[in-house]
Image (cartoon, rainbow, N blue to C red; front, side, top):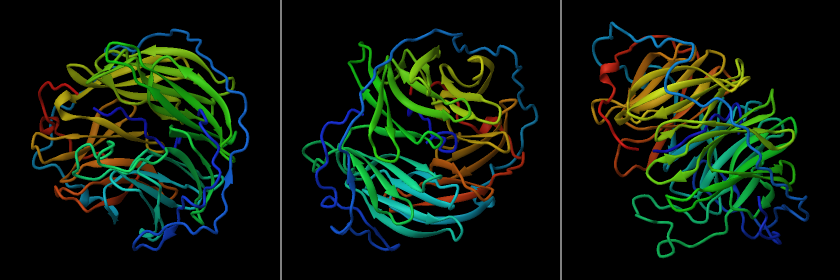
Length: 446
């Protein structure tokens, strides 16, 4: 079960070497046709200095998350809608074909440009949000592992893995099936697609603080299933890649949400990792002094990353045990507000995003029909599902644009997928079809 923390709107290093020559590695945007490599005439600044690394691990325990509502009452629909679940195609505003296997999307809210990564190639696709057309395809050194956009500076930050995944090839990133590449974080101008710094560090970009000009990335140190895993939260200069701080984490980070108004980061973490997330907890990090200020234990065998409604400063996460529950937390006090059952663990429900203006959450899951992939619209105030839509392909990334639309990726339903879709929806989705009996049932491990 994947643990997520993908809300780009509210977000989104240990330096192992100096990068002497970046242009030779090369990245360049082509037209909407075949990607091309960067010309060696491009100039990229290399990191020449690193500030002192600090390590902070002080933790204060606050009220744990429970699986019982503390103030709000769970309300369930008693009169289910009849008939088939409406298709997502009935509410699409646009549908843009993205070649390959698109798996994550980030938006520049100032320019309306969208950037899409691919799970099984080294291509970063650029989409014009006004025309809903592909405007460029940028070749990365290897498969991206994360993407964050700074709309204030028109910068795109991409973390790069140590190989290029190959679809339908088992273990395509092991030493026998791939050519190893050095992991790195790449900063790209969002308009020219030229890199302006590269940091040779093995970390995943997770959030950007536009006000302070900081980029956050995480590192994992995975131990055996019976031993505690740890990690780091790295703070880098968004303008130069220089490392400002290395915050030691007592558990393995799985996702991060950043709240600009309070300069706080919420790190979803696991003390042990096997088929379940052992010792699940939310680490609250103060972005001013870069220290852990609170530790919120989470029950169950796994949970989604925290997603934050910055209008109300409320955090939302899914907790998996014998059922899947939506938990809301008052982030001003770090206390739980409510717990609502969404469905069975076999439904594979995970949070996709938060619709800030409308007070809605979006989650994805599986229907009783094994071929049905569901988009669930949830009222953030009550925790109740208020609309459901189906798709033959899986829903993936999510982001909000600057034009009153939300964007999600839908995978192809074909087993030999060669493309997916970037779909835009009006952010004012109404209440409508609800039939919880059509969500998959049963008890499943992650």
